[in-house]
Structure formats: C-alpha cells, structure tokens
Length: 207
Image (cartoon, rainbow, N blue to C red; front, top):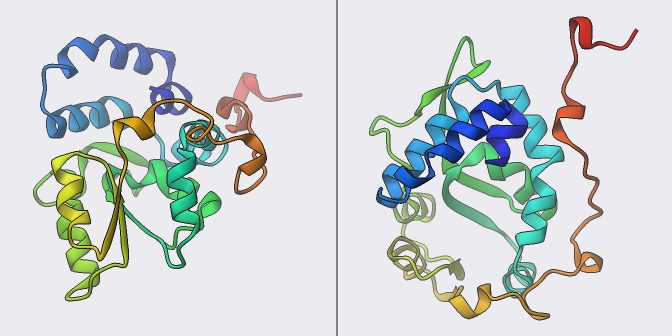
C-alpha cells in the first residue's frame, strides 16, 4: 500500500485497497502476484528508488523484531532470500542490517528499463523460490544459521541450515522484548515524505 501511494498515486493505492476482499480469497502466490501487478505496473524505477531509500526504512525499522535483530546482529556474513520484490527490501537490508547479498523476486521492466511492467522477470513468472535459490547459491554447503517463520516455504529452506531460528507467533506479539527501541536502531533514521524527494517539473517547480 505504501509503495503504491508514495511511488504511484492515491488512485493506485485506492485500487489496491479495493482489491483486498479478492486478495483474501487467493492463495499466497497468486495474492502476491496480483498485489505486485497493481503496485508496480507502470511505476517508474527512479520513483521506487526514492521510496525504498527515504520512506520504507522507517516502517521496516518499526516492524523489526528485536529478538530477530539480535540474532542477525550476532552473525558475520548475512544473506537474505525473500519472495518479496528485491527492489522493496534491498536498500534497507544492505544499509541498515549490513546484508551482503539480497535475492528476491525480480520485476520485469520496459521502455529501456525506466518503468516496471506487470510481470515478474522469470521464465515461469513465479515468485522467488527461497529453497531453490538458497541451494543454488550454497551448492553442497549448508549455511550456519537460517531464520524464517512457520510457513511451509520457510521451514523447507531453513531445514537446510545447520541451525535455525523460527519466528513464532509469540515473537510477533508486541512487548518490551520484541519491539525495537529507537536507541537500538542500527543507524540514524532520517525520514521524510517520499513525494517531497521526487523531482518536480513544469508548474510544480520552484521559481
């Protein structure tokens, strides 16, 4: 919703909101692809870049689980495999959590790479398979630690790791041990409305 509004328009965000009842009836894969279509189709890459750098980090930090962050902070080399579009999370993960490699669902582009199309940039048109991506990256080796949720997809890929940390429903409940306090943010947060960072043209330009 935030990307649709900040990167696109209030109409795009409203359309995504109206689709909510339909989305609830779809399985995860179809629901994600439908949301990606509404959110990204026709969106300019540079607008998404602005939103990813100056708007999304505030909300990711507020949603960051303190217990999970402490586990992540205790390891050396960090890699993230996610079914979310990579452009939504890569900037935050690398800038704030020092993640070295981010593999996510890739989006197709048109007009010489200036706009997102409605498609995922894979031959199958499917979201990133985290288990397959992890196995391809590590080969015969097993990662030392895997972090995931109780979903079947996550349990499948963290089972490859030597150790695992599963985020339970208890971890998701707001408490002093799960909410990330501002004084523990990994770096200073500078937040402003993403629309203020977009280049203005024509009659909207300052004189």
